[in-house]
Image 1 (cartoon, rainbow, N blue to C red):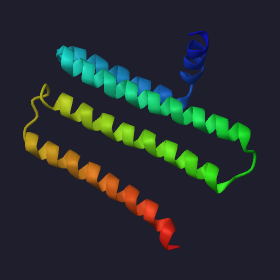
Image 2 (cartoon, rainbow, N blue to C red):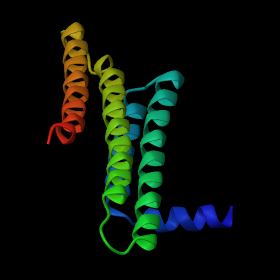
Image 3 (cartoon, rainbow, N blue to C red):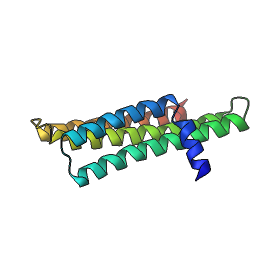
Image 4 (cartoon, helix red, strand yellow):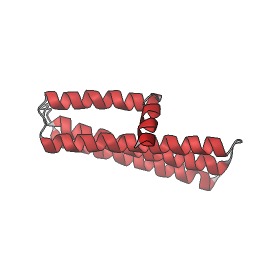
Length: 139
């Protein structure tokens, strides 16, 4: 427990974690202000903690690789890129969850339009990731 708390205190000062934490606090405060149900709050909290966990794992991987490998190496870059992609996917999923949770309480019109927009954005992201991955195979 001691080492976990020490890690949390250190990581809490990192820029990305500070940004995620600020957005999370705003989202949780808004959710409480909008009287989210226990289920809605649980889903929001799970999305937030999943994103934070991915960010912590990504940071740990980067720190370890930077310590072990002093000069640039393609395999190290690939590992770092994959870890960063995991954070990106988690952030995208968390944003989609937040949009869906806040849509109803804000009484925004065109619910099906929102679902189509979220689906389109997720598909565009997935396509971009696939194309980005394929680009190196055709060089």
